[in-house]
Length: 80
Image (tube, rainbow, N blue to C red; front, side, top):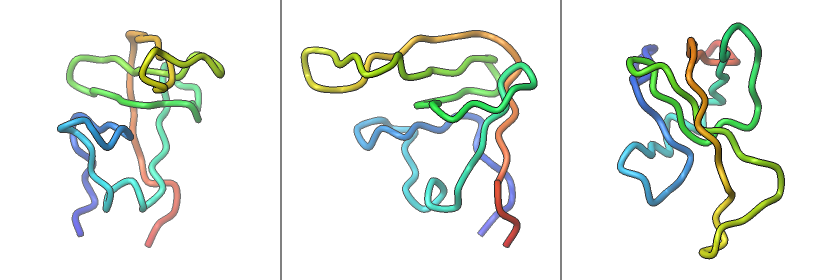
């Protein structure tokens, strides 16, 4: 498997940017230099992350998210 992460990745199975094999490898995301553990989706080229907003749910039962702009650095937490 490749060691480069995609430009955009989502943890939502309904998203076209979802990749189960890649998510199983334990990916971490640094946003503006700080480790974020509640990232639902990220895009490196556009410079944004979508974070879960607490326990709030939308009308379809999906977690509510907020989109923040800044420097995004995805990485693999464990080296294989």
